Amino acid sequence: MIDGDVSLDRSVSIPSSETHGFGVFGGVAHLSATPPVGRHVVADFVAVFLQTLAEECLDRGADLIGHLKLHLRTDHGALRASLVDHLAGPALHDNLGEFPFAEGDLTVNAIVHGLDAENVRACVYAAARSAANGNLAVAWNSCVREREDAR
Image (cartoon, rainbow, N blue to C red; front, top):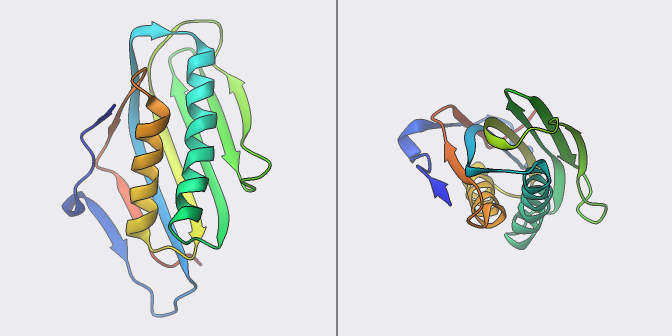
């Protein structure tokens, strides 16, 4: 489940005088599991999250997934993943180790063409909620940054 979605007053939208049509999202969330889960549950969450995020963006009218990426840091290792082609799916680089996963910090970045920053953020939250599937809790921190125009 998603805990504490970031409200509008805690995020930033930066308009540009030159519009390039990109919606950009960057945010950090605390990911946790009670009781701790195996690393396969975390890897599945990451893969489903990125794939669902791409599909949500396309369903809302995006015409190009520029880059979706994340980095999960724990006390026992890290997991990086990215998606640039929704048909090919995400690429994962798992270095979490064999320890059960209890908690970690998840950094998410999304660059999408054809959606504004507010819609990209909504897609990120919806995808995280769907991927967590009751197994993990996602609490978004206040350091969310959105830009409507990437350069």
